[in-house]
Image (spheres, rainbow, N blue to C red):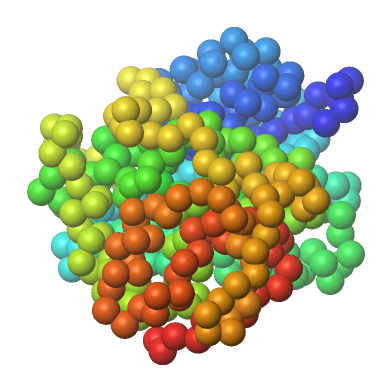
Amino acid sequence: MSGTTRQTVVVTGASAGIGRATAVMFAERGARVALLARGRGGLDGAAADVRAAGGQALPIVTDAPEWDQVERAAGRVEEEFGPVDVWVNNAFAAAFGKFTHVSPEEFLQATRSTYLGYVHGTRAALESMVPRDRGTVVQVGSALAYRGIPLQSAYCGAKHAIQGFTESVRCELLHDKSAVRVAVVQMPAVNTPQFTWLRTHLPRHAQPAPPIYQPEVAARAVLRAADHPQRREYWVGTSTALTLLANDVVPGLLDRYLARTGFDSQQTDAHTQPEGHGNLLAPADEKQDYGAHGVFDDEAHTFDPQVWASRVPWERRLPLQVSSARGTRCCAAAAGTEPPACQSFRALPGVPADALSLPQFALVVGQGGVRESRLPSVRR
């Protein structure tokens, strides 16, 4: 962004978590930031943070799956702030629990809030951007857009749907030779307030499956995507890269691994189970501001080498090594230690010793960092 040009940015789901951290980082650049979310208390808190960071704030109470509300909000932003340069879709709602424990009504609402929220946000953005032939839409995605996990069937299904929807829209823009860009940022587990206020059917307090990252790690990636939308997709975190690589190579084994570990890893006894019905049908932050962070600050990471590697030019990246005892060629960054999760995965019966000796490879893959690889052929 030019030092003399102030961007106009819209962020949905802006009252907490990744959306709020993203809004504040845009504000630090002096941007005009429209904040869209359901809860007035959280919106007011986010607006105060944006102003304190040096930006202009326009909080608008908006329920993202309601097209009329999104359309009105987009019109107000154009009237008060001018043409939208960047639209960030981030709003969602979730219901945790086994699929058979989540009611059809809960499943429908979680799907509407997440999937249709992105659809309506994208439509509102394109209706203003396409005629001007400029602008960027950033979809805050998830590793779960490619790899489903237990206890989050509604969320995983919606994120898969968003991925397919976005690819379709991107192809249409390319066909029309439009200068409007759509980028997706696939996120790891993030320390947001949603784990305190979501609808849950779990016996213990829900938690993001470790490793957990702070919202600012995710927000920096969103700004990177907004600045460089020519890249269609960004992966954030070594855990995201490892998960997606494993799903490509040995999805069947990953099914069994997640069946064994995915229930306990998404629950904790360290925090008291929240009371109430969560924010599925009504905002939890209508009267209370929860801030950007959740309750997992002690465990959350503020840095990941994979994120760094994705930003560094090729000639400055870590030395690459090409090796395999079985003739498999792969490019891997020759540094770092193997995460416990990768060690556990490789310990599963049937996983070849060299099949997932790729934690360093994950540092650079996913961002166009690995130009050529032939991954091990493993029976699925």
